[in-house]
Length: 166
Image 1 (spheres, one colour):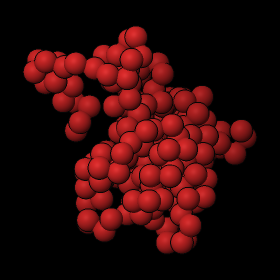
Image 2: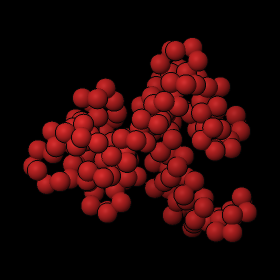
Image 3: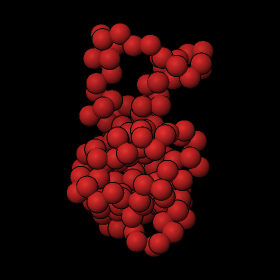
């Protein structure tokens, strides 16, 4: 915890007790996590429990634990040690995380994250993908309060969902 506090304080340049997306981007980069700014903003959105638009120390600690867990899972399933997850390795990580996707659904979604069309995801792309799935799961659960596993959306509801697809 002391090390995380030190990292947090090192990038909290205005000493506000909160770190912005830019500060978090710099912090993650110092730790070898070179995420796109859009992914950093999604991480803030995911872990910003007080809705400040920034991340406080406790939120930062939770985010660090999440990223560490995701890194361990990524490395465990990267069987060929390529530094990427191919479709089969990715499917295994998602199944372990509780996502029940068909290969068709996985391969339909992958191009959004595999921008070079290599058929595999780097760790940064994997994090972006998992955040996307988590947000979709929350959205699905909102429309399926009885947990039947099915939802019905009219066009208006579908349009209302579009921010989750960006």
